[in-house]
Each structure stands twice: as structure tokens, then as C-alpha cells.
Length: 402
Image 1 (cartoon, rainbow, N blue to C red):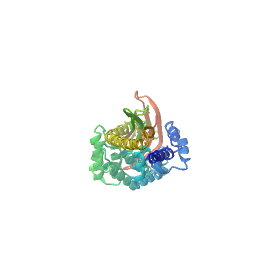
Image 2 (image 1 turned 90 degrees about the vertical axis):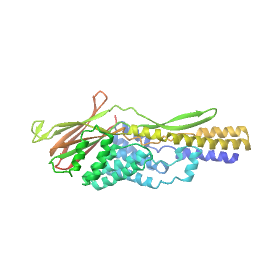
Image 3 (image 1 turned 120 degrees about the horizontal axis):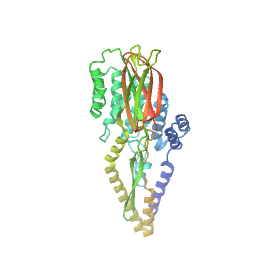
Image 4 (image 1 turned 90 degrees about the horizontal axis):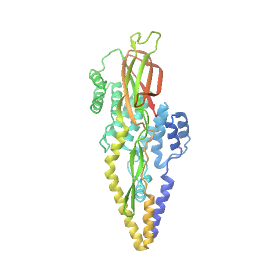
């Protein structure tokens, strides 16, 4: 028994050291990403030659979002769709992984993403397809995102995904399904002024108005990250659980300003007008992450208690078969192996927002200004030549990491 116990500890330690560590290059690329150096972040993450095993899906999610933010939509989808395919093959947990993690920690498990992260894989894929003007593909990804949302074991909503699905259904002239998704968003976010108009428009079957639509999908801030917190059970028991912690970021809201591009004096330009709009919060990912962790904490604690009980049985067996010292050494070894699984999709924003404007056909310059809590401008994204056509939708995607 003594030999078996120490063998279990040794194997668990080896597995932890070899497979539990983060993918090389990922922390550095995340840091560069949040410094705003997207090109260097992309180069750093592309330099990773080997990202297999238990962190493969996480790597694909992170790199896919870096590509997305850097307007590399096809590259982004290659990674995100591959992450989705990988997750489909991970429905069953390997027995060896479960056993190893039970006697060490959950870092030995292959990362499958939180339920809301799995929704966002398809959400971002849909955004990429919209920018690539592949409308059918975008709708397929929206349907996959909605399916993930429906089968989540946690009670939370992601109105950004529902709104994106509504837009995609509307583009494909599936007005009843678009209405259903817009109504879900209205229920969650009744303060957004254009939602009732969206519902009225699809109820009317999108009758011709001669105008076009500008939709700005806006991402703000930095997602919460998982950190460990320790729980000690006297006299010698310890377990470690993950919790989400918010990160500091300056940006609090965005304003979209649209100006016609022409030689005539603004605000009038052949029927075109200068307009502006706030962006409106759809999904607060900080809130979603916190809610998911709170709901699963009871299960996490129960698993840790069962894990402690199993380890204590082994330690007592070692003590009975060998010596008190051997039992104490076994307990210490188990305690040292305790570590929370703090892996998470760290390049996600804190908030997903939208601004939607109905415009006369023409060419516009669009400024998206990111503001702090005191409405001071932090940065601005400027789109010089945005063509708005009758009865068509044009999409802009923008992110502030400040």
C-alpha cells in the first residue's frame, strides 16, 4: 500500500508538471493584446508550434479572438471552428484524466471551456462570417450558439448572442425567427430604444423604406479572470477553489458619430444627416461569469470534500501499513498537489454592446469614441468610407482594451 500510495503521488506530480502548465507563448500574447499591440500579439501567438493536449481548445479560443480583433476574420474562424470541433469530441471524459485529477487537481483535465465561453465560440464565428458577407454561415453559427445556450446547466442569458441571431435571421428573410430573438433581447434589455422598432420592422416583413442600416458591434474592457482561493479545514486539510475576479479597465461606454462624406456643409448632405448614438449594453460578461461560478460552487465544494475524504482514506491506509510519518508525508504530498483550475478565455471583453442606426443611402465617416466614467475620450476608431445602401445592412466591429 505504501508503495502504491507514493506511486499515485509521483504520477500525479509528473502529470501536473508536464501537462498542467500553460501553453508557452499564450501569457505573453495576452499581455501584448491588452497593451494594444495587436500585430505583435498575433506574431507571438503564431510562433507557438505546439499547442496540443489538454489546453488545445483554450489556445484556439485565445488565438481566434486575437485574429478577430485584428480583422483577420478567416484566420479567426479557422481557429474558432476547430475549437468547436474539438469540443464535440470531448463529450466523454477520459477515465485516466478523472482519476488523476481526483487525486491531484483539475488542471489534469482537458479544458472544455465554461458554458458561456462555448456559446461565444459560435457567437464570434458568426460575427466573422457577417464581416465576410457569408450570411448563411453566420446564421448556422448563430443557431449553434443558441443551442449551446439552451443546453447550458446554468441560468443566465446572453442577449448579445440573441441579437446577433435576430440580425442573421432578418438578413435571410426569416422574419418570425428574427422576431423571437429580438423579443428575447427586449425582455432582457427593455431600455434599448431601437428594439421595438426592430420587432415592428420584421413583423411588417421589412417593407421598403429606402434607407439602410448601420450596426456597430462594440466590445469593451477586459473579461474577469479566474483566481484561486484557499479553504483550510483544521488541523491539516486544505483545498483550493477557483473564483472570478474583475480586472481594471478604464473604458465605460462608447458613442458612435456618423457624418456624411461629401462636399456639402454638414449637417445636410443631399438628404444625409450627421447623427450619433450611444452603444447599448447587451451582455455583461463579468456578470455572466460571476453567476456561473456562484451556481456551480456548491458542486465544486462537494467534489472537493469527496476528494479530501478519499485522500484521507489513502493516508490512513499508508499510516496503518507503514508508519505515522509515512501517513503524514502522504497527506502533505496530497495537500501540495492541490491547485485550482484557473484556466479561462482571458482575451474576452467585459461587455458586449451594440449601436444601430437607420441612415439614408450614401457614404459616411463613422467615429466610435470610447469614453471613461467621466465621459473623457480614451481612444477613437475611425472608419473613413462606410457605404450604406438601400435596404442593406453594413456591419462595423470595434474593441477597446483600455
